[in-house]
Image (cartoon, rainbow, N blue to C red; front, side):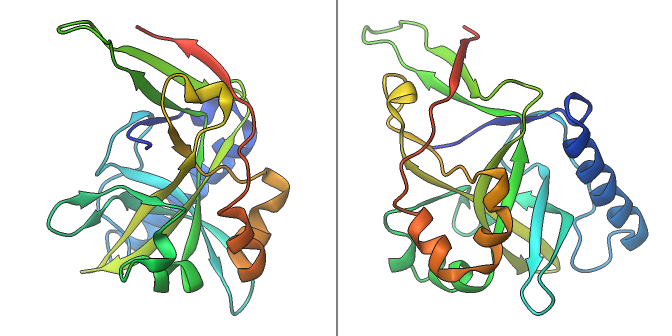
Length: 203
């Protein structure tokens, strides 16, 4: 799964540009549909935070930086969609065909739980280096005047699997537009092996 990640716009010129564009859009909308009211979160990002998200307009094939709320509100807050089963889910199947998105990050966290009772879990940070953006595949929807999003997860690469058996579905920077606009390409990404990532122990 993916339960936390980071956004540090100052660490990368591209992230800073996208962050500024999304915040400007928020200011211009002043909370009017379909933008959430809160400003985009930075640092360690938690479920329900307002997050930086790239959305594509299929009619024009324009890509824009927006703010969405991380999590789809249902009986509980749903923050992830499994790549292996999302096309079978009533909630996610229509979103995959029409409303895919990309969530720019610097990296994400996973926890390795101890085998013994009361043993402390170890927190790990995964990425390509904090100054290199990591783009996570997602889905979004409009609900009660707000944009909501989930992160797609898949089986872990061996560089992560000793810590957790799941990880976010990562899209290469050069493939962002194809993920957003090419349905056939996007479906193939659901089965793609993930890249190797660097790991830092944060304890």
